[in-house]
Length: 246
Image (cartoon, rainbow, N blue to C red; front, side, top):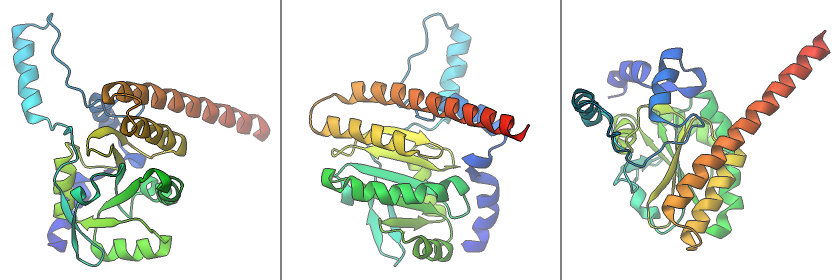
């Protein structure tokens, strides 16, 4: 299986940090600009013609759908023991899809380790799903001191991605509440401010202080604002560096 998967891995898996212009354009059609997927179904506008509705229906039938709940997925850990994601139902869950060769994925690992400890009082669990070769993942996990559960899969890893209704793009992170409902899905590198903002909303859902629909809107708006702030800071820093070089 290992050798047979090398070609599919090369052509099917895209790391968001090095995506081509074509892929970025494709991604914009399936995700919000700030990287949070809108999982709510959108009915076609009444103004659409019969032909355009028919074409849209055909496209939708081919497109994957983000499930409302964490799907029934089972993968092996580093020791070869199978684990189902349902084992963590009853806890707020952050599921991170990654690979050892993906630079943004590697940058996220210290944050994920920190989040697990900082949010332990809320019962949050981090689960990594590495779509990669087992030996490479085991070695990298030891080097990085990853202390949260890591499940590993080659073809079954690709199947897990499909079960979440996603294209094969790394990294992406799924946030679920205690009931196992998917609250949001973040495409691209997860930043600390985003993670804490989303986990606060998940906590509010679990405590009954907000409804799922309202939380999804708050997350979409909040993550968009954080992304804008980050872009402004990067622009300011770039301008400062440019002035200093003169």
